[in-house]
Length: 446
Image (cartoon, rainbow, N blue to C red; front, side, top):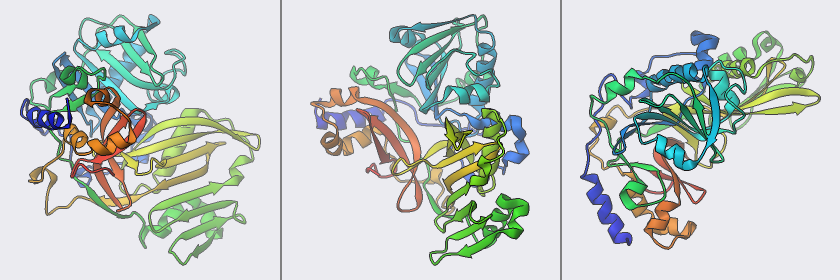
């Protein structure tokens, strides 16, 4: 297949299956302004842990040729899957490593697949399920969780390094949300292997999904630029020094600079408190995670959903702690920074935040042109591959289109925060290990 054939295939593919129908109950994309405000304080410790881990996408299979992929904006599907997953994993009778072939055979039947990109740290998953660390087995970071919904009572796990495990239990899994969705119209997805006889099982949709872009401004203004530092420093604020630099950066410091907060006009925040390293106190990873979330909440003026994606142990001056990496979700989509920089990072030691960095932007959809009423063409994944064929080939070497498809290991919808200070909906593609972002609005590389 040459480049022109790929273009023709893309056009034909647009015509072969149904468009997306969004119902009230299963609405996938809404403006953040329509979402009720929820702070971490309001949902409590249990609520924080339950919502701390979320898949980046959810795949539902009814049959081999009847597959859909969801952006679980409100978390309905994952919270139901989470209950099923916890119940199943609490009653594991046997854990065994299986072959990749066996894993893919398990996908043939009706099932729900939870995809994590980047892969979720196993300790974070255990904590969010209120399971004892290591109770499922000593896995590496988890990339996929497959939950069969008929006949097979097992749960399957694929790790980041492509190892596959079967966790056997005695109960057949059941999810009403999945059954209810089957009665509605939904977007059909097809694997590259099914369409082009590729070795890749990455799914692509028959159509583009209309997702709004968001212009942003700094989350900080004259009003909250004083209330946020007061919240961070608490009773220490009265003794803190406060200065504003020429570029507008607000600096609040205490104890001769040992505790310091910087809030930049572009919404970037940096905080460090070296006094935390004294007076050692033992804290668990889950309690430290809650502390990290409550600190994020001080700056989270949009009430965005923040998902924890990784945790690493750190040790400094004889004090041990945890560093957590977070990324916000906008309309259910993972928000990435253009240069793959970490969005939000919090280090916790001795029951307090030791260091913090993040970026916070306020955003609104264009009310004059609702996304679902737009007449603009929305690019699907094949459109993007066709439009950027030469660019991709100059970066990733392949001899023909089939080899290109074989090298694709991920196609996901995300938001990308770029130099234009906006959140742009994009396809994140991993091709031969390289990450690409392509706008869904114009198909161009970001």
